[in-house]
Length: 195
Image (tube, rainbow, N blue to C red; front, top):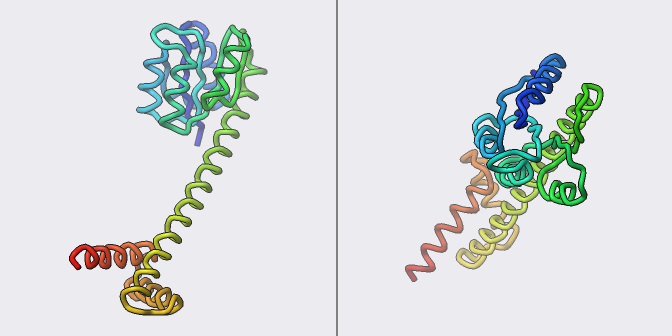
């Protein structure tokens, strides 16, 4: 499946040239915009694999649009610009910018930058998913510990018996331990309130 790219450039001729280069290389251009506001809107609608964004544009510049997009989505952004001033580079570091190309853009510079940006985006998504998985496991562990404590307190079970009981319910009802723990916590919190 070809990678989906959103192209944001206010100069229509430059945008058309870049679009042709990318399409010839097998990429799918899912949207084009000439300003930052439209870029934010299209990023939300299309959820592309990569955004190629100019910095200097009307309505909203590419750096501000990149910052907004980065806060909402995990989409890598490759900046295209005629400007290489340090302040632009510094601001670019604050968004989800994975590359920075200075115009004029040529095919032999654009395509490798796009490939690397797409790869970095995939790596970033993988790490983010791994972090979320670890956080979910930690949350489940906390819930299970809390539920064990409630069983020990209210039913005078040992820690081991509390865990085995929840494990048994989880297997018999074929529900995750997290759900069993939440049910135990809910039951004994309700009893504590009514007592």
